[in-house]
Image (cartoon, rainbow, N blue to C red; front, side, top):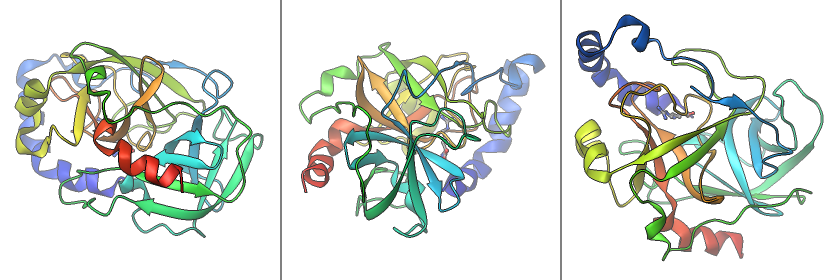
Length: 260
Ligand code: ARG
């Protein structure tokens, strides 16, 4: 799932570590707190936020309920997974909880253009065997490209690690991060950033970000699903925003799955 992130990061680690050492005080290198830099919340507040788990209900990614039996997640979360190996858990705020609703998966659609070589096209749709009794959230349509205004406040959610190389959060966390312009994200990531497929969010100084285990989860703009947590160089590093799937590019493909 997050293996490709580590792989792609390896080449950049030395360069960015050196840059961080020059540019940032040591205390800024170790990023502070939740999702990274957020607050705890609940699945009552965000009922559409799903845990993607293995058959033993161990969470490894996030997902978003967009219809009673349809969950949007990241393609990279589904690498090596089958309908037998995956469960979706809704209504469970804490990873160590046993409450909520567990659904089996009857179909996994992975964007056929996804490859771990580029991280592009990072979207998948799971069809559940049973309905989730939680309110789904709307997702952007193809024409909603205006939602990605630079500086717009994006809400991110997940159970991922609360710092780079840290451990997962037992309780669901959330934070807001401003959208970064495509040109700025290109400056950060070079040709790894593909503006047609991806959108970036984070503060110039870092400190707030998604991190490992948040992948597949939602990025919301105006309360609407507009991105999917995909990748980044480390977590919450200055100059390296989080990278999210630009969902408007894939709305048609997602709708074809949601309506099938
Ligand atoms: N690929 C990671 C995962 O599988 C998510 C990484 C997000 N990283 C970031 N710096 N925003 O959970």
